[in-house]
Amino acid sequence: MQQHYLFFIAQNYSFEILRPLQSHIRQQGGEVLWFVYGNEVNVAHFNEDEMYTTEAQQAVDFNPLATYVPGNIVPNFIPGLKVQVFHGLEWKKKGHFVIRGCFDLYCTHGPATTNRFNELAAQHGYFDIIETGWPKLDGLFTSPSYQWDEQRDVPTILFAPTFSPSLTAAPALFDEITRLSREKDWQWLVKFHPKMDPDWIAKYRSIQSDKLKVVDDCDVSHVLQAGDVMVSDTSSIIGEFALLGKPAVTLNNSQPGDYLLDISDASQLESSIEQALQPPEELAQHIKGYALDLHPYDDGQSAKRIYEATQQLLNNGKQAPKNMPLNLFRNLKMRKKLGYWKF
Image 1 (cartoon, helix red, strand yellow):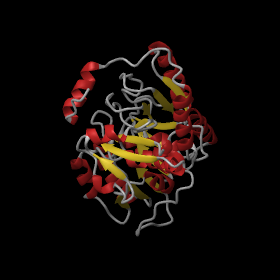
Image 2 (cartoon, rainbow, N blue to C red):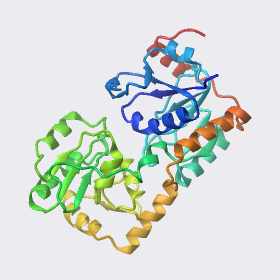
Image 3 (cartoon, rainbow, N blue to C red):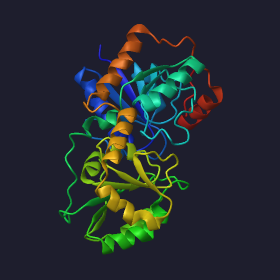
Image 4 (cartoon, rainbow, N blue to C red):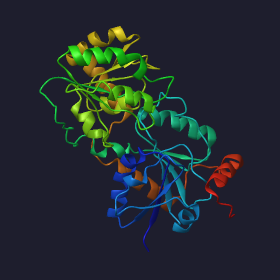
């Protein structure tokens, strides 16, 4: 009998995270159904060979052995294990270690998150932790570099801010990036988070030139390959860039580390980029150390490890001694939103 697995998604970034896992499940003879929650997923992104539904009843009838979730919540009425795979690497952001009573298994990325989640597992007692790496990164190290018509053989600066109004560098750096894109012999790629304020996306589009391009492509890996230096803030994408051994300049990072060149004012941007383009050996070593702590896997096998971690629980049962909490209010709220009232 064919094994069924559900992908519970609410954002467009889920495609890049979960498709490597879908590929591995299919290689094992399994079948995947994507369950779209909310109205922020563009269903035009689905490929012809991918099945999806917006109907809770169809997800339940699919009877999955496990449901994989890049977001924070999943309804408990769906059968099978609930597996958290996370939507980003950046553990510094508020909420990364919040336990919401939804998951049987957390598939962590590296020591930076595994150690803390192990402490939380011991405290709460109803979920397991297995370090697997992140499936989105399975193609990062072999991805071809992004190509565009105006590309030249000069340094490429990738600006990739987060969307959160309290953390994003997009407003504070707009004037300086505008100036640098006109005066310096660099080329800029601007890659926004899918949830970025459309007004700021429009403003950066307004300064596009042969030296600055706003990238719309959903595939982040090849854009990361194209950049020599990243400019950001507290975005989770900084971690992905660090895994390639490349330096980042950040504006007011919430928890700056020695692997970053963190600045507090836009006037420091130019000199910091110049330093990053010729990084000292000490900075390079700090970036390497941070990458090993964040995500020590560069073998492209994280999706396989997540699948095997799931099979381990399915075959041997959870090691956690307690049952999942009822979580009544959250689950009633999700039932109402999904229109599902069968018990």
